[in-house]
Image (cartoon, rainbow, N blue to C red; front, side):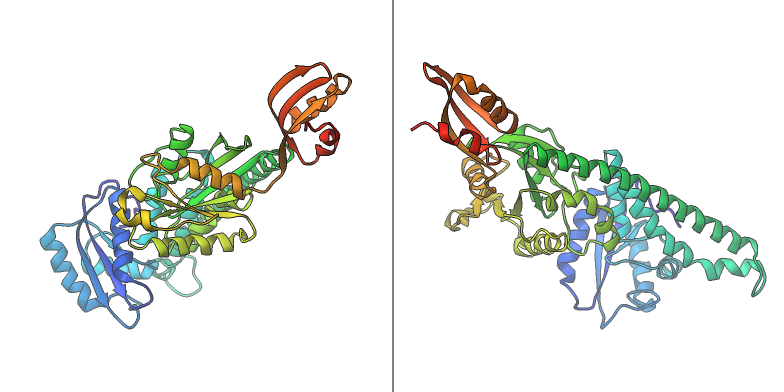
Length: 415
């Protein structure tokens, strides 16, 4: 019972030890959504109140024996624990239940593995899987070493374990090296964008708040958008034009989730760092969700962890079509209400982005003498010419001029 894939699974029971550290029922709701995303049918949910998790079986051997009878009656073939299990806990629980057992992290990793499309996405998933496997392999060392025959001997069990551990460590090193190279290339792309004055806006938010739907609605990007957790894992970026004439690159990022295991945050940190390099952050919030405020808190905490505190941020309240009282919510300079699905509120959204984007350029009209046409070429290279008109005294341009070259055109500004 060591295979971590769940493609063949049909029915499962979800199990939680409620120690009061977090809202166990809400966490189980999310686990059920994760199970649905993975194609698992949830037959029942079990919550056991305890002062602390049992170190051997999480919910206690007595409750596990009851669960074994319940699972048999329900004809389930998988138990999913809403926590992270050690190798010993998994082995102890499976011994009592005689049913395959996985934990929350394994379920998320399975979803990630099935949904990562790009090379980087697949590498990140495998790295998280290998890092997750390593300590769990080590956890089997005592059991396997008994095959060796005694203290100090290197029997076949221990030898096999050490071989497996070395193989995983080598694979982790290889994956980290590949990801580092991809990260270096991405940093070069970011540097080129900055040099070319390409403004970027990162769409961040909890999983399933509508980030991909918004990107598709604004840009026809064609990104997979499903009503499931972690529908998209890979970065997609598309350019849009703002009301003031500036262009901005919209970047879709991986969704967040409460109690996301640390190794998964680490694995996808390079993807999330797109937010840290953005000129503005579009914080998308599902206003129709009961725990929308908590979801927004999870997002804010991770953004702070990534060092995004100084980056301009706007709050975009999505799914207003699902909340009748949304019309009573008042917005400010940094908040806007939309329905990405119905494409409502987009004019206000684009104006809000333009209003809060750092001003790296200025729009104006200039009459450039014909013997100074080089100025027009510089403005075109670093900015954008919106219109040109040829007058006797020179070329009248309506242009977005980068602040670095504004001094060249300032004296020719039209009245």
